[in-house]
Image 1 (cartoon, rainbow, N blue to C red):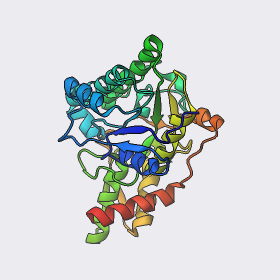
Image 2 (image 1 turned 90 degrees about the vertical axis):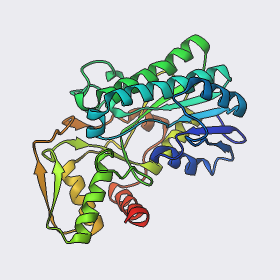
Image 3 (image 1 turned 120 degrees about the horizontal axis):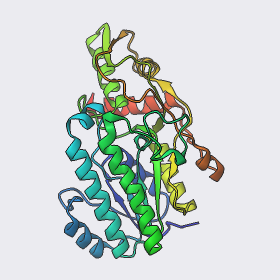
Length: 310
């Protein structure tokens, strides 16, 4: 067990969906939460990160900061996705070692696994086949982050661990039709259709790809659980173990939003990986499972969007 009580805990990326959820979850842990805005700290600049961490002296770190986006963003900004994410993770991990951070948790992504990985995806499938081309730049950076934590553990004895969440949705998601993820994009489209009494909503691809979706608040709970219960070199999957097609996802959001129209599928657009579901046996054996049913989480995510953007 690693107790967070009384510790100085830095959540890097606290304004993002994952980071803000971690901050909310940590409120009940009795720790001193440290954050820094982009105006105060550019995580891609090594000297800035080293100086800030030397001054702040966090004892535990959650690395939730990243440049993120959906298929379009990954496809059109490959250099940005690779450089920014490599720089962020390298600067934080190296500075954590230099300043004597007690424990660090690096947050990865399920896109690290091969495009045609056997399903459900187990942790040992990493680097066993080609990546999905539509997000390979982000995946390469996240794989490097995992290996970086393992390398510092091996060479310096650092208690640095990694968690690989499945597709996320929830409070504070990035609502941008060109840069956001599928859940956020669907919520935006369906809400707009409901307001306009539109008969149809267009979806990218065929609607058949299968995905697994994890609510932001469940992710945060799982990450705090790992930080306090796990200390090992292998990365750990965090998910629900349940999969949903993109068509079913759209239908669920339509139900939550109260929209009665139909979907039109643009099959000229890419589907991405055909199927992606995580093996969550590791977390299950440690005694943790996601608690929020998909419909309940989508309702909360939709209500949050309407309140803040609708």
